[in-house]
Image (cartoon, rainbow, N blue to C red; front, side, top):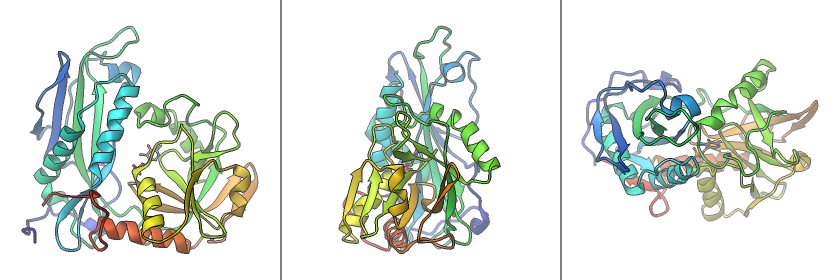
Length: 345
Ligand SMILES: *Cc1c(COP(=O)(O)O)cnc(C)c1O
């Protein structure tokens, strides 16, 4: 049993999903061809040269993960090695020096340990969001990779993504593209988000919650939304997810597919999914660290409405089971597969 420690004076149940400054963050610098040891700091501000690579050519990438208080009072992190590995691959694609996987996981542990009073108590629905990121810090003028970088991890307590239960959302099949074939859609680069802002703001103005991006080449296949992967449930209870080289490999999605097969005994498949097929599915959900699952009730494809049988009131039954099982694993109520849970305290 972990020692009880004094918690920050926060109204956990009414926390939103936003930046909240905590005490300590991790910083490591890359200079003269190597990463330094790194250290914890109280300083949340960064002073940069005006011509830093990140400011001029958006040389930056990030990760997102969470620390939880489990039902028996431990503080844990969910699969941090997968975030570390994904950021490693993102860095290579952006010509940034990858941050070593084991050092990444150790730094995550340090940041959580140093901010224990901000890890929301069990039962509040809130969690401690962790944001590792890296950026080019040396001045550049011509287009080339920076020679110096900074890697950081900060923590911010976040409330339950959906207050009062997850209401199904409505998506628009976007006229914008998120990821080019052979582009950067499969890596967590800041640039993918900068260029998605116009599409999401436009969709919101038209009354939609999110965009469904079809594949950029043929615009006939489902890829993902701006920040979450898809899964669908077929009429015969199979859980399927789109296969494409330009989708970001969501850790939540990979975990849910495993849970579907190994915990719920459902058939699963990763394959190309056509927009044409959407009308045949019984459930649709978005998955990502922030919300785990957001149920989708309706998708609008240029005036054509696709309404899933699960409706606009609640999550469909299979999505609900997936959600309960995965969050059960994260909060220590259900036994996790080996290696999924990193105990901090
Ligand atoms: C981060 C992200 C996701 C979700 O990934 P998780 O590892 O499950 O949080 C999905 N799509 C995009 C584009 C993302 O950037």
